[in-house]
Length: 391
Image (cartoon, rainbow, N blue to C red; front, top):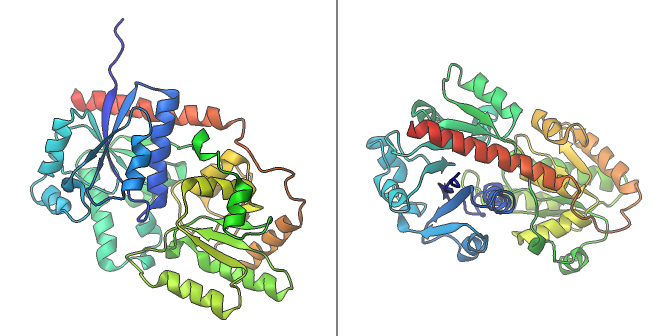
C-alpha cells in the first residue's frame, strides 16, 4: 500500500501586530501538525514582502513548513477588488498553482468564487454581528460581505466552537455549505519554555504575585472593566497588579489605547496596571506560568487563544461569562459579568488571598491528548474537503 502524499495547504500570513491570536493560531497549528501528523499536511505560508521578517522566520524554523514571500500578499494589493470584480484573485491563484497547492485555507482573505482549488473558510467569530456598535458602517458591511461571499462561493466553513456554530445558524440561516467545528488546542514547543519565568518577571519589574491580561487593545477586549476593578480594589486598600501585553494598534479606533492609559494615570493606577507592549511568545508563556491568574474580560470570542494557552499550564482563570468561555473551560474557571467590575474585583481579591503556587507551573499532562485531537480533526477536515473539491 503506497503512502498518501502530503496535502499542500496554502495559508496567508496574519501579522501579529494586526491580530496576535491569528498569528499564534497558525504558528501553533503548524507546530502540532509537525509533531503529531508529520507528512499529512505541508503548510505553505504566503506572506507579503513587507511582513515582519522575525515573525516569518519563526515559521521557517518549523519542520515541514514552506514560506513564499511575494508582493501579491502585501496588505495593500487590491486583492479584494480583483476577487469581487473578476471572481478570482488571479495573481494569488497563479502562485498557488506554481506551488502545487491542493487546498486553500481562507482566513480574513477571499480569493474569489472562481478559485480553482478546494477552499476552507475559517470564521473565527461573529463580532460584527454581536457587537455592531464597535464597527463603522463601512467596516461592518465589509466584514459581513466577506462572510457572505465565502458562503455564496460554496466554501466549507470551519468554526472553532459550538457557540460560534449557533451564531452562524442565527445570523446566516438557510446556508447549505458544509460546516465543521474544529476546537483548537495549544501545545507550547519546548524551545519556547526554556525562558526562566523569574527572569522575565525581573526584566519587566513585576512582583511575584500579579494577574496577566494578554489581550490586544481592542474595545471589545474590555480592558476598561479591569481598570474599573483595579480602582475598586485600590479604594478598598488593596493594591493588585495586572500585567497587560499585546498590540495597541486598532485601525477602527486608533485612540483607544491612549484613552485607557490616560484613565490609568488619572486614577493613580500606574503601579497597578502595567503595559508591557508586544512581547515575545516565550515571555507570554513565562508570564502565564508565573501568574496568579489569567484575566480575559472580553465581550466576544470565537475560541480564546489566551484561554487555551492558560489551560496548557493549569493557570487559574477569571473570565467574562460568555457561553464560549464556559464551553472552552468546561465550567472550570471563575466567571464574571462583562459589565460587572465589582464581581471581577471580588474574584481578584479572593484569588489573590489564596496561597501562591510553590513552583512555576509546567505543561499539563493532558495537553498532548488535546493537541492530538485538534490535529486529527483538522487533518480529517482538510482531507475530506480536498476529496469533495476534487470530485
